[in-house]
Length: 232
Length: 161
Image (cartoon, rainbow over all chains, first blue to last red; front, side, top):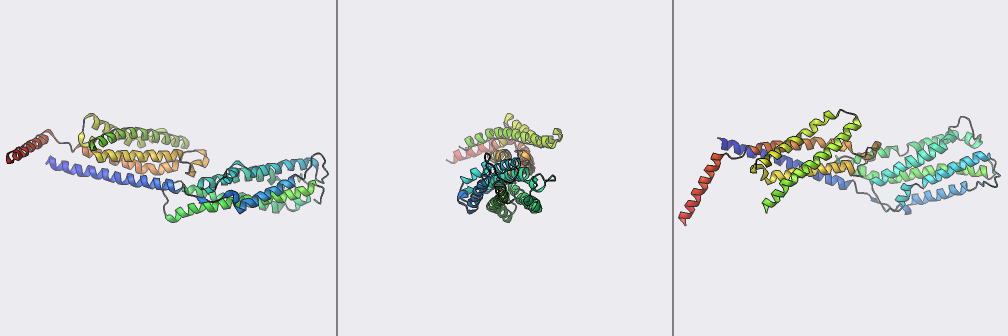
């Protein structure tokens, strides 16, 4: 009688261990596959990319506009102290465009999800927070009209609209990228969505960089006109 | 050969059990600290570890060969703890799990909490498996009977020759 029970216990015990064995292998391979899957990226020669070349050229033009301001021999129509202040702000903005993340990306020919995330973070921190909000938002939201400048006063709404667009441009991307952080992708479609976000997301952020640089160029052109004594 | 491999796995399972316990403990404590939850609520997570450790220690101390010599059991235990360690590694150090950067926690808590339920289930099933295997130990009378049968068979074989 005991022998029979013993046989049953052997079968039940082994069945339990077999179930665990199956589950453990399933989860282990699922995790290993996902671990490799999220590391797949796209080949993009960042430094040779057309959008990056456009960005570089725009930054060169902005720098040339900023350099119109001559500290020692100032003859512009804009008040000197305001011109000096705006010069510093614009220069800081140009420096923000040359942040460490973009410098690291320029060396790469292969972009993965971590790079895109860092690129998006750098856009939010360096471009939006440090440049647009800290230095330039005041131009469109200045109750004292401290610049007292016809260009700014006339185009205030337009500038604010432009800046608001920039502020919300890539915010969706970060939320989508967070979807990679589980132990498997529920469907192949979902996996493809996350992977597509890597390549598309990179160009999305780069285009946001370009849009922000265009905005900065508009401001810098108005600034150049003001500081070299042209029509403001 | 199989005995050597089995011996290796039976020692390895203890080392992996202890390592995975401490890894889980660290992550769970960090998780509860972040949520400002009472740490005593986390005790149920560690109960299966403790029970399995006690069972395995019991098996080793009382030389229960039906469990310690069970290659499949030892190998499965190692596999489960390896999974624990891999999950812990991903939660703590996998840079590509972007959620770990959110709010600067640097641990993928939600990923770990996704995995903790199946991992706990596996531990409980291992406990059940071990428990059933303990009862498969042959009694003294059975062992005597078996040895008598064996002796008879060898005698018959000898006479036949």
